[in-house]
Amino acid sequence: MSGCNIKLESFEGPLALLMHLIEKNQIDIYNIPIAEVTEQYLAYLKAMEEFNIEIASEFLVMAATLLQIKSRLLLPRPVITEEIIEEIDPRQELVERLIEYRKFKQIAEVLNQLGEEREKYYTRLPQEFARQFPPPAGLSLDDLLRAFAALWESTAEHFAVIAPEEISVKDKMHDIITLLRNNNGYMEFNKTIIRTGSRSEIVAAFLALLELMRLKRVVICQERQFAPIYLTLKE
Image 1 (tube, rainbow, N blue to C red):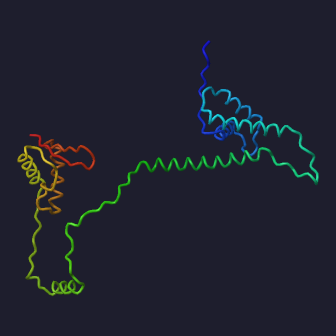
Image 2: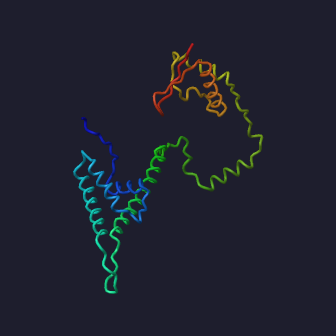
């Protein structure tokens, strides 16, 4: 006859096992039936076949404590008189330990939930960007005020309004294909695609790339995040 394999739940310590028995049997933590809990606790220890010696010592100490409390409850209590102070319930210390354990367990569950939520986010360290257009040095507030006053007093005849350059998406598509053909159909996506740097050209270039990808004329690939982006022309 083959041996019976018993699958046991793992507990971090004796208090975890006691709390499991109390919650499983829906026992009032302030009125623990020591006899019933002790029997279930000892039955669990007997079912353990392979365990760590250090952890087992903690479970055995708790078993001895339960047996001591059980024996104290079985002993007859002395008659209460004025000279004899009423004896404290032997279960009181155990109840207080279980209540503290339950508080720490609840706090640990909350911290675990917060940790799981935080794992969904990635924090990037602040980046430092070099100034491309540093302000002129050696200017005082009076110099700036005089320059502003001179500009304000100037007439409109000294200035000419430059009409913004209109760049169509179709022209930008042709421009990108031409650049790719001049580079053997393969090039890095960089500032060479943007010639003037105007806002309208940037928008047109972005829409042109999307349209070329939709038409399957251009393929975009990137090996990893923040890596260079490459364009490939498909004739």
